[in-house]
Length: 138
Ligand SMILES: CC(C)(COP(=O)(O)OP(=O)(O)OC[C@H]1O[C@@H](n2cnc3c(N)ncnc32)[C@H](O)[C@@H]1OP(=O)(O)O)[C@@H](O)C(=O)NCCC(=O)NCCS
Image (cartoon, rainbow, N blue to C red; front, side, top):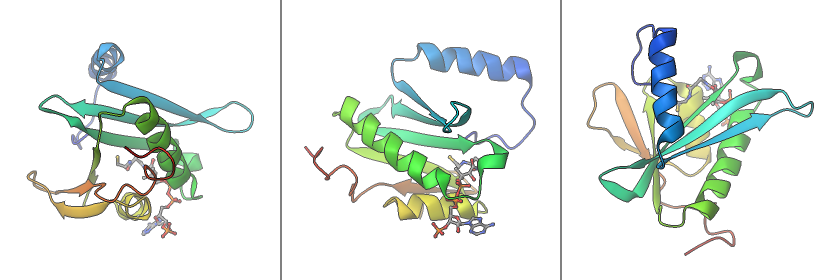
C-alpha cells in the first residue's frame, strides 16, 4: 500500500515500479483467477535496517474485492515468501486506521496491532506466525 493518499501520476508510479523490480529486497506475487486473469498483487519489502523484517502490501482489482479472496492471497503469499526467505522472521503491514476490510484480513492472518510511529497508520506485526509453523518453521 502507498502511504500517499494523494493522486499519483503515471510517470511517478512507473519510476517507483522500476525501482521495485530491480530491488533484491522486493518480492512480488501475482494472483490469477481460474482463467489466468491477474487480479491481485502481494508485495514484500525487506527492511533495509533490519533484514529479519519485511513489510507486506496487498491490493486486489476492485471487482474482486469483498469476496474473501484477499485473505487467501495473503496467506498463500506469506507461505511462499517465507519458504523462499528464511531470514525473515517478522512481517509487518501498514494499514490505514479507516481501512476496516484490510484490518480484518490481517487480523485473520494472525497479525496483531500496535500503534505505529506514523500518524494515521497502525502497524501490525505478525508475532505469532501460525502460517509459518505449519511445516515451514525455523
Ligand atoms: C484489503 C483487501 C486486500 C481485502 O481483500 P478482500 O478480498 O476485499 O477482503 P475480504 O472480502 O476477505 O474481507 C476481509 C474482511 O473485511 C470484512 N469487510 C469487508 N468489507 C468491510 C467493510 N466495509 N467494513 C468492515 N469490514 C468489512 C470482511 O467481512 C472480512 O472479514 P471476516 O474475514 O472477518 O469476514 C482489498 O479490499 C483491497 O485490495 N483493497 C485495496 C488495497 C488495500 O487497501 N490494501 C491493504 C493495505 S496493504
